[in-house]
Image 1: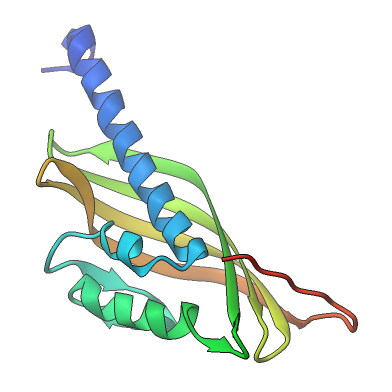
Image 2: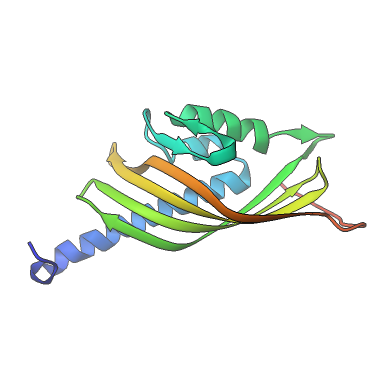
Length: 165
């Protein structure tokens, strides 16, 4: 059926699907920033996700990425986290393939403080995702991230970093 012949109910249902996918992506980034591996894992299909993260590795299931996430994000020294991340996703471009499948592209504004190296990194990353409905909820079945550029610089003398996780 052409887009102009679709009913109002069908178009509203499409918008609700897109809103649910958008909320999924934001939950994923919020889990990254709040260091929540369970919420992070819950964003992916149970098994078989295609994950490509450049220097962070390629995985054929979310379990490998979760293990890497835990190793990096949850590392502490002296009771403080070593890595502090900030993910701001913009420019969503979501296409519904069917009622239970979709693809999406996003741009990420990324900022990271590394207290082990005493550096700050700023980067832009492009995401190429696929989504499916699993057990009535949208999940990521593909998540390919590609860093376009980054700047890493030392934290200025006297920088005070606080955290409250």
